[in-house]
Image 1: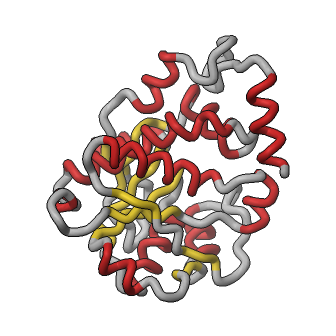
Image 2: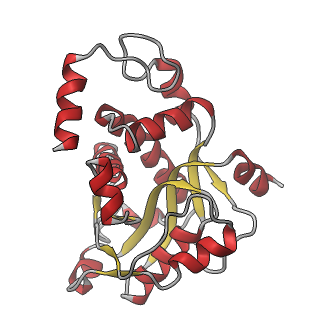
Length: 241
């Protein structure tokens, strides 16, 4: 219900750019370029958690990009799913360019985008599943570019986890370690799509992406990498160095 009212309000109230506040536009061209106009790059948290797949991010998590992500996730600005999905699709393409998933085109089945799951409480509080919505938009964009892709929202939280905000890297890893599993009867899905990419909106310490990749691999999925919309500017610099 909460998400429904937000969508109605978005049709009635005059929009402002989620990135810079410019009036009468949901996302201005300048902020769109900052979000999804650049070339995705590999990023590394510090320290790198054991088991983290290669991660590509579309943009640094700062300024306009940060505002756009928060507006979509926390304030239910549903119209931002499309540009955020375009950014995520760019990060997926970055993983493909790196060589991990180049053979997606050509009969090996669709590339499966597996979003990191949110807690039920978070989804209920926000009124929508932000990660899944972005993943769906990314898959549409990839298919439009000729890359067979679909979303497989198969990950589940098996136990309660604390809010990751405010936790340091070791506590985040401990918080989610062993917490994720896959839904039943995914074996056929892995056969239909031979490659899996774990996706999320943001990487901080890499704990959630690592646990998601572990859960998928334990269930027989072939994880070829991970893609996110944004990462901290430091994570970009860590890989460069």
